[in-house]
Length: 169
Image (cartoon, rainbow, N blue to C red; front, side, top):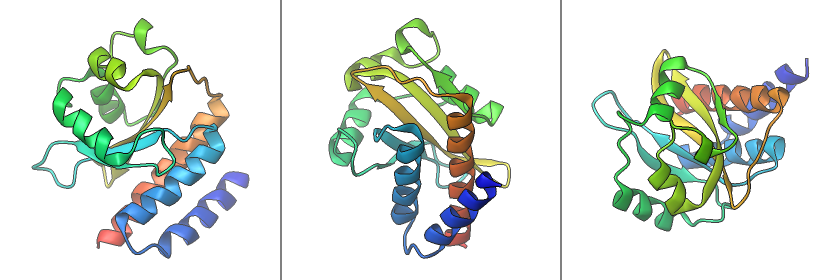
């Protein structure tokens, strides 16, 4: 019942938003409350013919959005060959990496560039089409989340994807 209440409240807030960025900031705010971490961003794919790209970052993240995007351009992350990114998309489920150095799937160069020590990947799907992945990162420290926190976070991501679809239609 709590999950349903959360979805209804979140949907209500998102439906009053006038832009995709506003919807994402509402999502990031709720994710940060559930996870206790404000280092949240989304990589999005706006249509079937474009690649994923850094899109929006939580306004309270340790990085500013321009620096974050600029650094991604320098790194040139290859989403098609990034094992972790592809696993999140193909598996259509969240993935927790408690220690990026001990896991072969993340792009270690990108993790080092940003100081990422742990990450949670939350895929965004609309009608079976992956529109993005919300990534919550531990910068300078590792974050561990309970299965309940991860489930709530994925529910927020799913609600966000639905509201993004409604907004663009």
